[in-house]
Amino acid sequence: NMRQSTTTHSLLSTLLTLSISCDAFTSSLQSISRHQHRSLLPLPPLRSTFVAETEDLQDGIEAIDRMNPEFQETLNSLRHYPYFRLYSCDMLGSCEYMPQELFECYSQSCEIYPVDEDEVPSDIMAKDSEEHDFELDGWARWDMPSEDYYDTDQFPESYTGYDGAIIWKFIHERICFNVDEDDEDWKADFNKAVSGLHSMISAQVIKGIEEKLEEGDDEVAGMDVQAEFQRRLSVHGETPHALENLYFGYMLMLSAVDVAKSRILSDCAADRIHSDEAALLQTILSSPLLENPSVKVAYQKLHDHAVKDEYSKSALWEARMRTRDLMRIMNCVQCNKCRLHGKISVLGVSTALQVLLGRTGEGGDPTRIHRVELAALLTTVAKFSNAIEFCARMSK
Image (cartoon, rainbow, N blue to C red; front, top):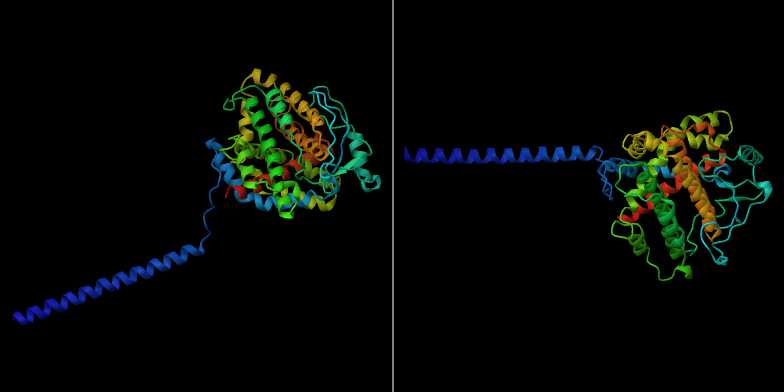
């Protein structure tokens, strides 16, 4: 009996061990199956490599990082069409803000030349001439149109070697508002938009250095692209909020395009914008990035600050005056290519503020936007989009 009991006990132990092993094997198979099933599901979106100090901007930043690459491609395609690449710009305007020694940029990369008159579509030239006007208390004023049109396809953004530090110092110290960057005020929002503009142009400059290094250009020999990025745009650099303000400015630009959507579609339907450009614009205007609530946070902040009380509303003339000053100080830029792109970018930001704020903070009338303002708005959105992609790559 004892031998039988021992044998029975041994048999039960063996069966129990086999049962546990089978359970473990089955559990392992189920785990593998679940893992394989999960691998077939869409991966959750990656968080942005940049974390904003202002928490309520973070969701918008992540939305931009997810959707901007495809959006950027369409925007850059749009820029190749005459409507968005031809600008009649005064390259001989005098600097009225600071004493300057006469300096001519003899570098080939600085110089630009107007296109032949027959290369400018007659409808663009006629429209610009018809729409040009003078509004005493308006937003940034574009130059008086002439026969001299410049082509941003022929003279794209690039590194020219020009040092615009004195211009930016004047802008931040004398044109921007003397308020704390954390103030809950539209003046602080205005400063952030200007800082975002500065960041966008800095990204263009660094990308231009990178391109010239790849070409083996002696002009940039010894320069370090990553060091330039860290100095100009990183949170540990000279302007810790440069990247956050780049995103803030881009959010405002996107919101302005969304507000102006009906005007743009109306121009497309009326054939005031040719069919090829219209097709691209319809793709751009249908992008979920424009209607994403988290991307509209910057605009909502600007709006709420502008209408929070009667004083805020009545002081908006100061924003209009400053956009005019921003445009005029571009005449102090002594690199012609930089001056052209600087003026286009300032007009783009000014047009965005005009659409978003208007005179009362409740928004302007998009139907009053001129051809050159609409072109500058979309061109500047593309410039911001390219800057965002470059900074995302440099931050990895």
